[in-house]
Length: 222
Image (cartoon, rainbow, N blue to C red; front, side, top):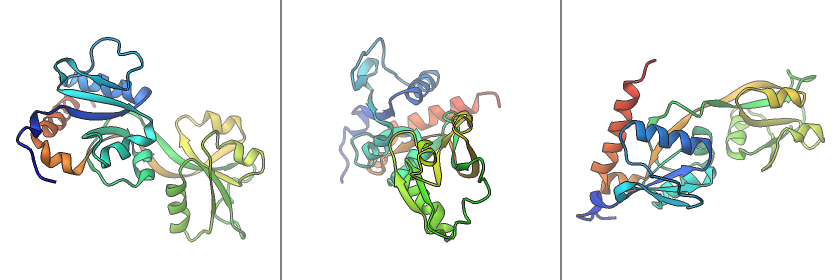
C-alpha cells in the first residue's frame, strides 16, 4: 500500500469490544484528552467523536483483532486472551490497566492432580481451542480439544470433557460447579492494538493517541 497526503487527517477508526472493556476504554481515552463520542448513541455500531476526528466501531470482542488486522479499523482494544487466540498479526504498543483476569486449566475438585497425567487422550472443553491446543502440545499431551461457545463448566458435569480451559476472574463459578484451577495458561489484561499499514499511513495521528495514553498512565498513582 502507498501513502496518501491526507492520510493523517482522515478519521481514526477504533474497534472496541462491546461491554465493560469498551466503557473502560472510553473513560481512559477521555481522561487522556482524546476525543470520544458525545451524548447517547443508542444502538449505533459506529460512533463519531465531536469533530469527527475519531470513529469508534462497536464490535463483538472476538472480532476486534480481525477488524484491525484487515484494516477495517486502525486501532483497537481487546483482551490478551482474545488477541492470542485470534493469532492476528498486529502491533501491540501498549498494555492497558484494566481487564485483568487469567486463562486457566481447571479440573474436577476430586481429581485436581491428574490433568496432565492421563494415560489416554484427555478431552478438554474450551472457548479457546488455539491456546488450549498450544498449551497441551508444548507439554507432549495429546489432548482432544472440544470447542464450546457457552458455559464450558458444563463439560465435566455432563461427561463431555475431563478438563476445561476458561477465563477466570474470581473463581466463584468454578467452585460453584465443583472445579478447581490447576494451571494458569495466560495472565490477561487489555491491550491496545494497531493495524500495521495504518501505523505507517497515519503515523502522526496514531502516535498522538499512544503518547497521550502513555502520558496519562504514567501520571496515575501506582
